[in-house]
Structure formats: structure tokens, C-alpha cells
Image 1 (cartoon, rainbow, N blue to C red):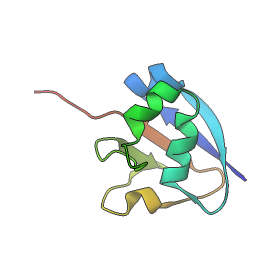
Image 2 (cartoon, rainbow, N blue to C red):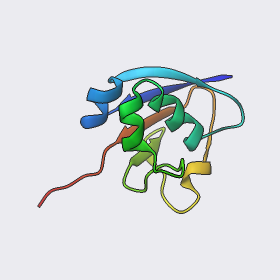
Image 3 (cartoon, rainbow, N blue to C red):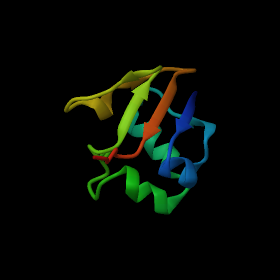
Image 4 (tube, rainbow, N blue to C red):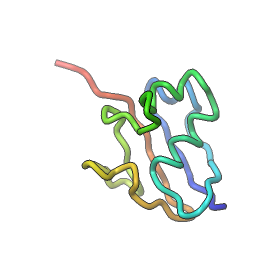
Length: 93
């Protein structure tokens, strides 16, 4: 198991909390970290994951302040002590 630091913002802060840690099994990925975050609030899990258990494309994710994008982003590795920031979809105009 490894510990990962989580920061969540806006709506996700309300659902999961501001700053906290999760423990995940190795090899850790964005998907396993997001699933662990979702365990803090089952209702919030539906806002993070789709019906197939994949991280929703609209969720904005950063590891150590670098945005993770692309098709394989949920398989991106996460290491001990990394900081994962989770933002809800951004709307505006």
C-alpha cells in the first residue's frame, strides 16, 4: 500500500473534503486513486466514475501540479507521496 495526498476543489471539496490522504495498492494508477477517493462518499463516486467504472472524461486531474490528459490517463501511474488534485468540470462563459 502507498499513501497519496489528495486535494479536491469546488463541488468535489463538498463531497469528499479539502485535503486528505488515501491508501491504494501498488501498482497505483489514477483509476485506483479516484476509486479510493470515491469510497469517502458513495454519492460522490457517481460524479467521478462512469457506469463502466472508468474515470469520467470531464473530471480534471493533476498529479504534482501537472494535468493528466489523453485516452490512457486513468492508467497513469501514481507513486508514494504524490499529490493528486481533482477538479469538477469547468463551465463558464
